[in-house]
Image: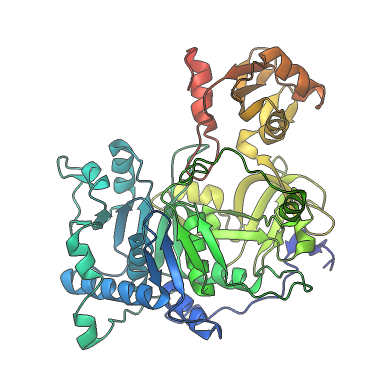
Length: 512
């Protein structure tokens, strides 16, 4: 194996350069809740009085002690009130971010109930599809989101009913008196049990339910714990980590980062939605030159992960690694990768582009009730085909080029939309942009750009095409431009290209 990039030329496999981290035996009963608790309590700097969660709007706070008490009380209340609620039952959760959601997640995970959170902005039709897919026995919602789950249709019938999270009854469940008498009810959870069903974004097709086990989350937590960011040795200041948290908790990134932060004893400031202008309506920041320099010196830590891996599988752990601009970092421990030619199936060497394949204990169990999609994504040897066009450089850093399914096929050439989007977004008059394939009789497909102008800008289609033409090869030129008010995106910020393609093909002239 090459010690510089982790590449084995015999197997054509990339291995992590991080030291391996031991995992608990797979046969050991262990929920992700118990595992993170054990990591937390082994931390010498852990204090029960440390704030874990802060609501950015109300400023209400939950300390670690209060959080643990509340989720254990809720778990006990659920087992007492719903004696038929058992391991591997699915709980459907429709709620925006609040202090109650992490408590609910940890309570359900601790008793082996599968957590299935969804976007609270989902329509009733979308919720119907997801309910049919996962067959939940119980649902949790706020008084507002519950309106979409009212039992006025046969599609919404949960065997154990619907619990309103922002109700006095739910608050009583957080302070279960029985736990003071009989103690916390322990449930033996297998690592192979399903911990969560999280939904793929559906940016390239139908939404799928990704089945992630407790073992998956144990593995990814262990990996991230081993690969924690190490600051510059010359900086000896000790600062308690506090992070503002704009991530939606129903998304894999938010879900996993919640688990990670709890195990590390960090403080999270939760936001229901992220808005730069939310509180003070800031439009600009006057700063002195030294402050600009200090801000520019701050590290940007990048990584790569997907719903099917339960979280990040590459990342950066030092200031030196952060200097690799454009990279997604190096492989985390306990994970291996291949770069595979999508046409021939041949495994490739460093600096060659192909589809990224991943294998390790954090890889999903499969897609819920979708054997065809599971077989197409996971091969017999456990390799996950990510669908991402990538390459590793000579030092083992991963670079994401684009989604394979999103590549534009212009004549015999492949054009990555992400590359054109970077150039578009560098134009001062452009606030945001997305590139899609547009059908063409001669070329097959041509690159078409949807552009959001900055306020006051009058930049034209021709000007945009001319600017990009000077930056790219002839086959990558943008050959069609349309202006819109906003680029449609998922809550996690992924461009919904399918919506733009539908809009382009519909022939309507109205703006999105």
